Image 1: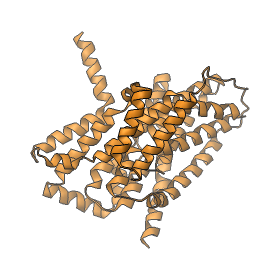
Image 2: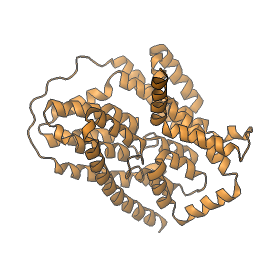
Image 3: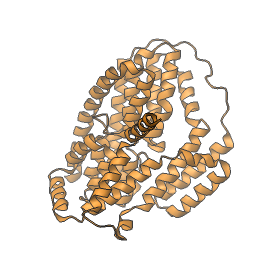
Image 4: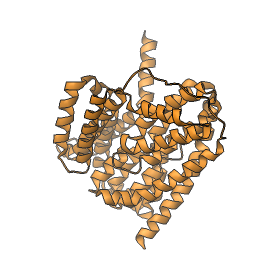
Length: 379
């Protein structure tokens, strides 16, 4: 019994490694800056509340199978394997812009595995899922609600939507073009006719309500309505419609943010640490944010580095482009890896190699494009 409990604890620690690390760093930093009311000022409650609203609403969309139905439609319209791959990758790319990269992959990667097995083309699963993962990380970069680091930086620097889109659109557009070109590696082998893969119909009324709640959450992101009112409205309607959705919220992400808020707030008060990080970032905010993302992933990198620089352009581009590269550069990538290796454990090594090759290529190309863009903006 004790051995089983220990395994559960170890598995939990493994799955929540980033959250645990954030909490540990927050606790360690408290020895240098004793707890006080100032800790409350570190925490950006607007970001946490908006994240909560978006996660609840997206859970509602998943509950009514909206994303699966969209993916099924793409599969049924595809005439050959390359077209199927392109459709799935672009759907992931677009979906991630609005529903986060994590949700896009959690929803569509299992669907991809099922469809490819059904048409006897599982040999393309690794390549397609790797490109899906890159598509999710690139697509989510376009909007403030596409991923947690964007939402945080959008709020942290008080950016306008036009500012954000003008900065990120060139990189996201180039990434989309590269993804389309990458599908040329897949042959145009005809697919057999696919029957309807589901036996359910979407609850249109609930879907419509979730669309309204999503719109309210987005308006809160853009500060059209107060965050608090958005939280109250979303909570009220979800309590009435399906309170079980609250159980599907990624609370570990919220705790992770709190941990990093406290850690960054504390170390920013330690003079020699603050000076060291500030001097480091002065050399190249973009390069440092890309490299930091490779080691600790882009969400904590964004929270950590934002406390020591006002150059939002370099940091925003750095943590988004830095989502490619290593497997842990974006936690969404870990989701794809786990989903694939769970279905094909013997091919985990091959997946890792293909993932690394394509991610490094995209990192180099988009990194070069981002540097060129930054230079043009400075000119």
